[in-house]
Amino acid sequence: MTFDEIVRARYAAKSFDPAKTLPPDKVDALLEVIRYAPTSFNVQPWRVMVIADAERKERLLAASWNQPQVTSCSHHLVFCANVDLDPLVQRLKERSLAAGLPAAKVEGFLGMVRGFIAALDDRERLAWAQRQAYIALANGMNGATALGFDACPMEGIVPAMYSEILGLPETLVPTVGLACGYATDEPRPKLRFTRDEMFFERV
Ligand SMILES: Cc1cc2nc3c(=O)[nH]c(=O)nc-3n(C[C@H](O)[C@H](O)[C@H](O)COP(=O)(O)O)c2cc1C
Image 1 (tube, rainbow, N blue to C red):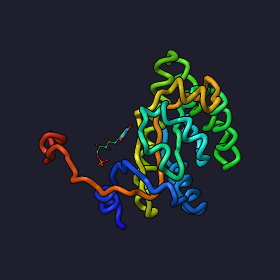
Image 2: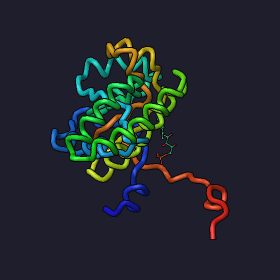
Image 3: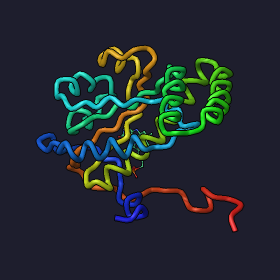
């Protein structure tokens, strides 16, 4: 499938066949597509919890506005914003140096990144990390279609309940879910606004 075909074929699946589990190689391939998502300054401020355990998915149902995608899916991915940014910058430094980038350049760049982060208050820090998580989510949505299965992005989650049920630290903020599996419903017609409504100043 070309990328154009993928974005047209992808849809938010509302129900999955609970008897059909995604094979491990498909899950691995999806996680790689997600991992390669770009992030601002390459800080990568998100982590994804991958949940295949039926009991755990069942416990998340009430925390997901009772949306049945959570329990019928094969794997439920929980995209969490990671607001503990300083260790990520340190890690980026290690990776950059290990990749052979010149130390002075790395330090200069990371100095700018640290300055950017230091200027953020807690809300801005969370919002920034969440924006990066959504880019990864988009990779996951399209990635599922490219890999031959289905997914439903899910903002209809209660973050505080997710945190408690999943035992997440305060620094990992559940932001959006991606229920993945083999859909039992059919794509609905695409309802999109027109080009003129979406784009302007184009030649
Ligand atoms: C960030 C995001 C969050 C969403 N949250 C939910 C959700 O909680 N439950 C749901 O059924 N659909 C959810 N959707 C699916 C949208 O309703 C759907 O993408 C939109 O109606 C367009 O339809 P399509 O994706 O099938 O083309 C979400 C989509 C996005 C992008």
